[in-house]
Length: 389
Image (tube, rainbow, N blue to C red; front, side, top):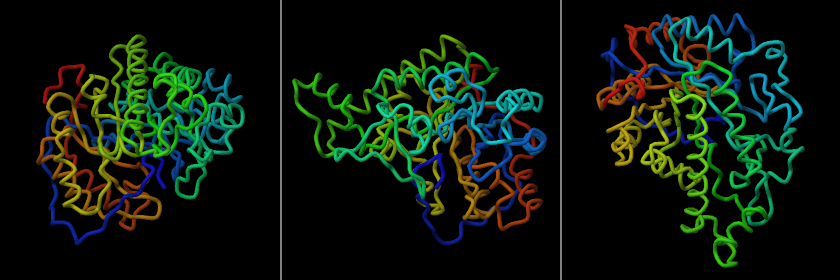
């Protein structure tokens, strides 16, 4: 199960319509790819990382999203993490003695790539992580007191986004990255919310009671008022984080890569539609990981997507494959063209290894196809430097 989305809502269909490359290539277009440490080791060795960024640049990609917060650790040396977790850096051997994020920023910029670190795990952590063990009071739970949320085969726990100490910790990590690295932006996804079945920890229940004349929250976690109260609290926090980022670096793009609104709100209390309306999202990359072309197309047409598209760059996240699931290049080509036909700002692929390494098709054939999809270089569509819909 992929960390970018807690679900693999992958639907199968008849073969997609034939699409013959090369594809039309706009002047300004997001061409992004997520760099994760799940089912990928490209971040764990300096030369491998450098070669990967070089290849992306040669194939006319222009944006990378390197993970910086994952598995309960930072992937860059962090004083904030050292204080709260007891380790300043993920213990994976390949990261030791290095600053992976600085390498991505420096090498990426040399190659003309926009670098937007991805705060992948958000409020989520492994159940057996040092973070969870050192701060058990930070964890939230269901109404029956249980805490474990399964992500594939993995046991996860969630920090309560309503606690001031948790909020400070997460915000301090974010500000630390913005302050210490020459990044172009920072990206959040649904993990910057909370699974809607959670939120029944003592602190949150007491806060709800305080604001509701002593009344307890509904035992039904899908109760609309209880959902809205928690979602609004997360929105308030998102506003504070946005303000904190801009106070440090006003031209740091705040990017959000959520699932479609209905899923994000109902399952993760992440009301990105409201965030976008409030001006808290400057770059939206909507995850639409679908095999069924009709479903893929229908999700491009939602009113909130069109509304966002009218005034900020809205791009579409396309699944290029998973470790156990190879996506045919034909499907990728078709989806890219459908996105272009509707004048979206661009596309981003999850994830690097599946572009050509983890695939049933030959790596060289896949790379040739991406070269045909992106035949010339284009600029990253940056709202802060004059991008217009």
